[in-house]
Length: 203
Image (cartoon, rainbow, N blue to C red; front, side, top):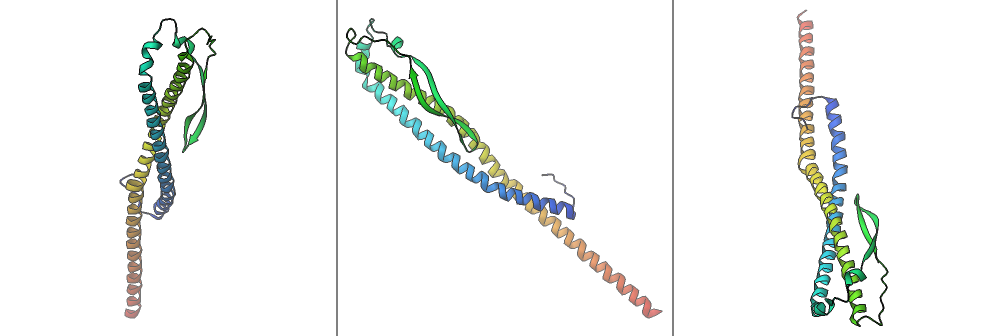
């Protein structure tokens, strides 16, 4: 807002309109901030849970490492991601990804000629890849949501701490000024009237 304002009724009317708009916008940004905070907290909890699940599985499969390292079995070739299926969802003006499925390439495995642990290993690796993909998606979503949350917070603070107080202050200044001008005009009119009446008496 400019430092110098025109002290007239038009400016006063414009400022009152602005103040009404600011007061309407403030609860919108407050609600948006609250909504985004809740979503961010939920996603952070989800990421923490997924990472814990990944770490727990990694710890539980350490005993398999030596066996899974057999040259005859290439699990990287057996468990390949074909595509990630997601859909878009809008939250408080932010378009985020929602995980639907992780499709793996069909691998021909002859379970009669492969070790017994391969079937279980494939399931575990698929689960780990799914959880890691979920973490990647949620971390991307989290970054977008944090940016939007920061913007909502900036707008809320700007309205609450700058625009609304400054507008109220300028309205008050103009009203005081116009009131002084009106009182001065009334005083001058009375004085002129009194002078005219005095002249009539003298005549």
